[in-house]
Structures are given as structure tokens and as C-alpha cells.
Length: 451
Image (cartoon, rainbow, N blue to C red; front, side, top):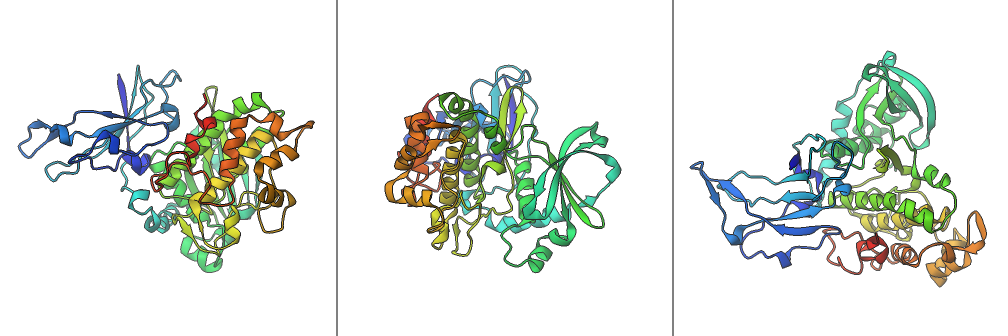
């Protein structure tokens, strides 16, 4: 039995921040999607250095998480058995124990280093006070660009919001490892967040927040973000070097995947479930993405499996409640409440996930915009319901069939729940800040529970 230690901050707060003292019972612990609880005995050291077994009323519980969620794999590529265990230590003055997450697997597990970071959780109000700090730290780590260390392979895409371009390069100093390099004019991105905001007040795109959040997520071992290898600069250009996602973005993957139908639904479901877990995890860390889209979800191959990577945190926020002037994201993914005033950023992300789910499974978008009067399809769904839109719309690449015929009934139910125009009626992701973990959670939907 091997164990790999991972920093507790890599888990949502609900996984490790409880102080289970007094009359805490198993029944009083919150329900988390895909997790189960197990009681265990813990030894602690007191001032005399002797171990002492805690009494039954002080025995903590651990959480078991599906291994595939955290991206843990054995050396042979197989998934570990037994899930992940979170030991929650009690906060007592006599001991300095702190919680750890261990991946217990049969056989040898792949090495994964632990990291140390200050606890930042949505339970503590989210990392609002750290967002600026992360951006500043990213700007302070900029290094000099050495063009001799990289060989251009090909252009991947334009980075229009950053006035730049993304290219595939080989890092010659790392044995030709392929990396994605985003080139941006320093005259636009500037030398740090303060200078950027001074030059571009009110900009919806915050490149230093993107880098800061990505660096933070890398530091806590968050498995659904690209690895940030470094930020570099020469006299004119700023270069962001990241790990290369071998399969491109989800939009391209869907476009290559043939027609909508049950076979495609089965292939795409493991990818979509990863996306939902990733966003749920971000919310538990206090981060709302606010620009979720097929283009901002990358895929890379690990053995024969696709691994999801969420990118572009330039519109992200650590404030769950946003003002009326803070609409973000692409028009067809924007929650309708963004056009009406203040909104819940978590609920807005969940609406965008509904569009992601629709587009991935239907090979099409439900509407072009959610703005008032901007799209007849969205207006139709508002008046008659999304299910009526499924019955009226023909399947892309299959004009003889309606969407309601090619998508499974439980999938239609899930999309419908995520696409509610009323954010209070919309499905949530079972975030710890929500009290309605039951029928109103995506994880409670039959489609999410079907194997």
C-alpha cells in the first residue's frame, strides 16, 4: 500500500477544514458529490512526546474521493483503488497536526510532491484578498527571454483578447519538450497589474490575474490547469510558456467527433464530468471563472484518457457577488442575469456549463446571445422552455432528426436544469456555500449518476 502526500489546499475547503470536536456525528457532515465518509483513529503527540489515542468523541472522519477526480494514477497508468483519503486533524493547542490528503493505491503510485501554502477557502470568504497578491507575485517572477532556447514549430491560434498569438514551440533546453508560448506586446500587458490597470482602467481582461491564478493553482496541485513554466520578456514582448495540451480545445474535439447521438454522448461524458468537477473545485476555492467556453477548455492525452485543462482566468473573480457593470464571457455563454444587474458568479458559471454541455453533445449552440431581444432562439426558450427548443431544433449534420430525438432524456433534463433563466432555480454544483445539496444539485441528476 503506497501513499502520496498532497497539500490540503489542493482540496476544496469542504474536504479538510472541519474541526470535528465534541458531539460531531457522521450524520452531521455535509453531503459532497461522489464522496463518502469513514471514521478513523488518529494518534497525536502531546508535549511529553508520547503518542496518545484520542477519545471516541474526538475521532475525526476522513473523506474518500474518486481517484480520477484528483488525477492520481499508478506508475503503470492504472487508477488506484480505494480513492483519496483526507484526514482532518483536530485543532488543539497541544498539537500542531495539520490535515493531509493521501492517495492510497495498491502498488506503487506515481510521485507527486507536496506543497505548502496558506489555507484559502470559500468557507473563509474566498481568496479575495489574495487575488491581487497572486497577480503581483506573477509579475515579480518575469525572467529574461532567451530566443536561442526555443524553436518555433507552428502557430496555434491568435490570442485576440491579449493582442497576441499562441505558438507551439520546442524548449531546446528541456530536450525539445513541446510547450505553448503566448506572445503579447509588453506595451499592452505592461510590467505588472498596477501598471496594466493604470493604462487600461476598466479592462474586462486581466492578464496578470490569469497568470496569478494559474500559478496559485499549480502551487496547490490543482490537476485541471495547464502548468505555467514561466513568464519571460524582451524589449518589446512578454512570453508566457505553458504546458502543451496535445488534443487542442474542446470546440475542435467536438468538431472532429462526428454526429450527435448516444455513441458520441458516451464518448464525451467522461470529459464533461471532468469539466464539472474542475469548476466545482474552483468554486470551493472561492474562484469563479466567468468565461467558461469550449475554447477555454483544453484536452491533453494521458495514456488513453483525455485530461481536461481549464484556461484563461483573465475574467475570473474571487468575489462571488458581482456588480451590474461586471458582465463577462462570450455572449452565448453569458447568464441572462448578467444583463440585468448584479449577479452570483457561481450561478453564472453554472449557466455557462449548461451551454458547454449543450454544445458538446449537440454539436451546436443553443443560441447566439442571451441579451434581451438579441437572439430568437433564446427568446423562444424563454417563452416556451428549453425542452420546446429541443423539440423544434433540427440536429446539426442530421437535418432529418430533432435534437430531442438524438439526446438522451436524462441529458436533456440536466441541460434544462443548468439553463434556467432564474439563477435561484438553476442547478448548482453542490458547493459548500449552498445549503441545497439535494435535488437542486447537478450531481443529483440521473445523467450525472449514470455510469
